[in-house]
Length: 412
Image (tube, rainbow, N blue to C red; front, side, top):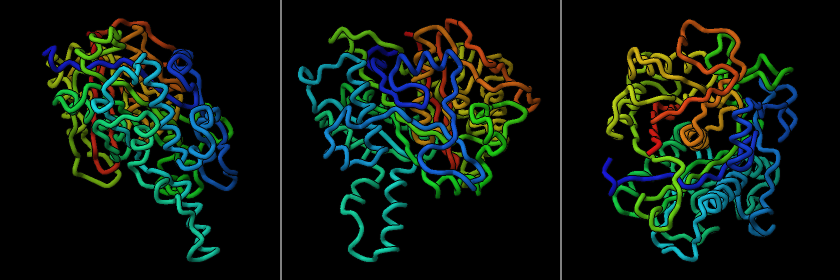
């Protein structure tokens, strides 16, 4: 590795249904805790799918005064709060930093659907002149990144990424390129999502991609790679990683959690929702990440799978992994089994889990894994965490429209 281009992860800020800080999140993952419950944001009676993994403990007024909090959509509140927590976790003293050299790349797949739905209903009922003037600043997709920068007073590169379920991964990958290119010394990178609305739930259900067979047993609804999986569980959350050049981290005597060593991205260019069925371009993204890191396939000791718990995606990802790594047997797990599918936040949250797996030498499990699917014949880590010291690990993300992103992290 070229030390001059090395990038490290020094802090994590995270809000999920199973933990709202790095320690609680990690401990819950290792314990195999499910955050899926009957939907709380609204009454889901009558909906085909009635379960979700919501962040029920988050209070924006722990981070902002009430007036400032009200200016932000929930997705921006989560993003900005995760950025604040990440900076704290990294021990990054912004008062002693050049704020012009600190950037922010945080994305959201959907932005603020809650206000969009609410204000549309208000407009239909009350007519022109009734829409809240904060609607646009809440709804537009770049605001999670902008609100995070405003909250911290940082003036470096700022970008809001939107790449469907690959958003968080692409945000981190783009940040890697900016750091390698000398555009910043530190970048806060990740994703956020909060789309718990009746219309969004119904829209995904209408596509046939949500779990609907486990409404009476929510904790068991998300079951990636299991034979009886029937769709993904809606999730919400946010995660921001503090990424910095190794040189900058060493100057401030920060201890890296892991190195961000590789990134690969491709496009299926196949369908608006269905993945390319043979996993060719998803496999290529994995191979590009390994190549970017200067490693060999056999160096990869863990795959944090996209693992949505849908019939098609889990089968296709299995094919892609086999294409990328041939006969190499690599442990695989999907934390969506515990936190649901957090859409634009998923890649960032799963990147954090991958970083912590390398850092602690323990691989989180796939819970609710009961029956092997012959179409998903991988080394799935079933139900219990596995202690394994690994050199490198990848985190996969694949989004609607065929957007594929893979991050590769190493121990050193």
